[in-house]
Amino acid sequence: MYNLKEIVDQIYYVGVNDRQKEAFENYLPLPHGVSYNSYVIVDEKIAIMDTVDISVVSTFLSKIEAALQGRNADYLVVHHMEPDHAGSIELLLQKYPNIQIVTSSKSKDMLKGYFNITDNIKEVKEGEKLSLGKRELTFYMAPMVHWPEVMVSFESLDKILFSADAFGTFSTNDGGYIDSEIKLDKYWNEMRRYYACIVGKFAIPVQNALKKLSALPIEMICTLHGPVWKQEMTKVVSMYDKWSRFEPEEDGLVIAYATMYGNTQHLAEAVAEGAVSAGLKNVVVYNVSKTDTSFILADIFRYKGVVLGSPTYMGEIYPMIEKLMLAIEHRGIANRIFGCFGSYTWASKATKLISAFPEKMKWEMIGSVDNKQSVSSEKYNEAYKLGIRMAEAILNNVTDNK
Ligand code: FEO
Image 1 (spheres, rainbow, N blue to C red):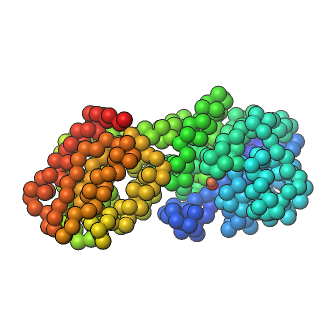
Image 2: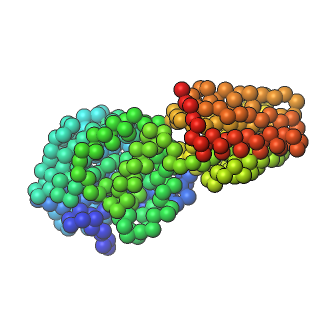
Image 3: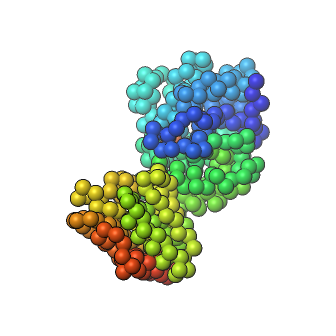
């Protein structure tokens, strides 16, 4: 039934698209779906590289059957135990009970806890090798990219890195699996959003993994989500390097605001107009009540400037702006240029509270605008000037983060 995609000679893609799930990890929207990637290496020994989410297990098992062509698999290499990849281990082993699991020591506790699997596990250590015949796998630990048990493996013949979550993207694979075969437009921001939401907190572990892997002559990356990276591999690694050093990709400004009756939005428009008037082309404006935090967070990883705007709501910051601030704080995003604005009717609180945020994040504060009730032309001009100053700071790169 399945005409499996051969990534290289005798290595097959057996991953499955999920076009049903609304939200990854039950909170991150999936407008383009997601893929759970798995691969089968056919050699003297056969190795299955990870499984898939339990929701798509039946398609996965059919693909495995097609790849094995009547043979039995020898190994299941488990790079990562999160259930979007490990979820089908139990059913795979029910069907092929002689498969030996090859994994890191930290996975053993999880295999027991999730599936009560304790037997026929081969624990591998840093640098350990596993021969499959003409191919050989070498294992490297990559703790906290994205869970503590994560490891990656390097295949010797075609120089493929099986990278677990690293370099993964949201979005399904639509008929093509290797980057050179498909149009990649939709993947770039979905990769940025995946990084920002899933991996973004673990900057130091990502840097450690990048340093370790830089010594390998990698020619292709098989990640657990999204396309196989070959042609764009250098770009993808460089994006990960930038994000994990909190280095913006380019000059640009994210303005994220909340509004109840339009006054705070009025200020957002003024800041944006001011920034563009000063020559900044990448200006994106988000209403936090309309756009999910994950998309805004992705652009905060991308651009150098952030302006937040909030009405005073019950004497506090508007809830969706607080949510965004918490997401930024949890990831420890560094090296940004900041401004803020707010509106109130009888008691000013939000602008003051948000003004304390850059100190906490060690960001450079450019200025704030606080507005009472309707926006006067004076306040509009103040917000416009804040946009100009933000743009000048961004374009002149005058950050002095301490
Ligand atoms: Fe795609 Fe951390 O799992």
